[in-house]
Image (cartoon, rainbow, N blue to C red; front, side):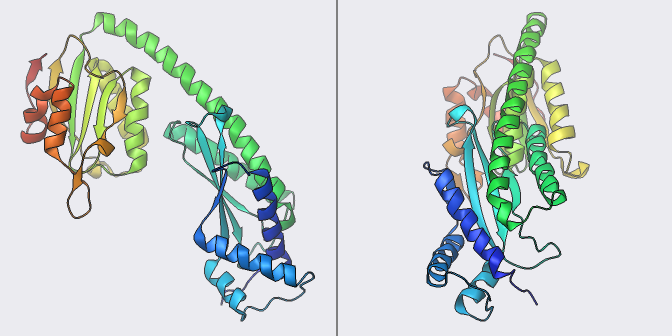
Length: 324
């Protein structure tokens, strides 16, 4: 049977929240879910009316609520260089149930930031794992959670900026190399078809990986999913190889279903960047994951690539080489 941690630990969790609330007071810096907010309000009332609680009743209304909630959950958002487009979100769980480790130490995790590659997101997440291991090794407990959280926020900001700058430098180097290659090789527009494309991390990687090789185009998620790549054949192949070996490394080979539908030699690009257009397209179907192909066709025609629609969406086989 699950049992609550000691009352002193729960009181420390409440104090940790009040400290974090005062430190991370800017809009969107600290958020809590509805269950956590309800528990915090109840704890505030309890501790104000019971300044020196010594025992904790699991059978009380509040005790039963704590058992159901299992942990207080906070999300703290920090901005790299105070840039709104560069948020890092740390999820904090303050455990309410007894376990093998009854110190009440906070559990920290990170929501993968969209501006970093998957590999670097994993490196950033590892920073919190290392910090938690250091805290346990040093004997930290619930009373130290506020300091642990502040250390975590500071560490991910420093390391996140470092990783972001490394990616920016890598993209700059890759663009320089790609421009030299493109002087010698003809541009192509390559179209890929997915029977299904849904996972947000995989979709994000399809966009972010493109900058390594200076590729442009668009990604459409859903059933079906589409990918348009503009660049040299060499760069398109290197990109797809990296996607399959890195981003899709956790997917069995027989599930890595993607088909090249059409390949065109082009004299100029139709797209300035690589982006996802899923939110621009009306979604139908029982799960709302089937894009309106009429809108997709209109989008392609607006970009001047509508001639490929029949080969990419309608044709069941690989299209022949064309030109534009």
